[in-house]
Length: 173
Image (cartoon, rainbow, N blue to C red):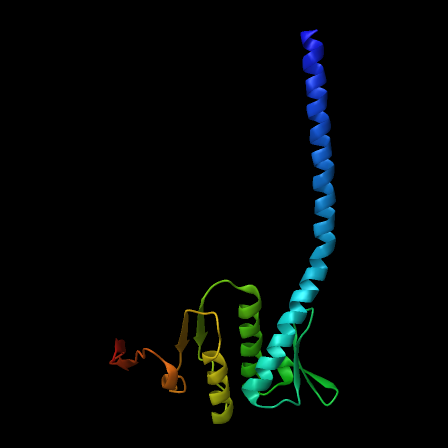
């Protein structure tokens, strides 16, 4: 009788484990099928935000930046797509930064952002527009910008200058 009771308990446990296994298999299937749809939605949201940022950076609402599902950056202008490689250096910098900023806003809970020479290859107008966009980013407690120009100095709390003297980098201020 004791063995029969233990056998019944073991069979109930086994049935519960099988039910749980079936549930887990179902959840795996749902998640696997949802993955591409979630990715598409996230890429589209990033692409929309990047398009707005790009238009603001270059101060031109005619062209539309797109970040495609295969993660290619395209600039649509008058019905034609120009791939990233065909953009000018300034357009490439603005497009890459627009996508990066959009990625930061859509996917990250980190509240610190680093920018290394974000204004290189940009003319004065686009450099100022990009600086305004970076400085207007909300939700970050700190932004660090490493740059050889003084575009960001107008709105910084701290500026650290480094100069190279006799082959050694030294903090100037």
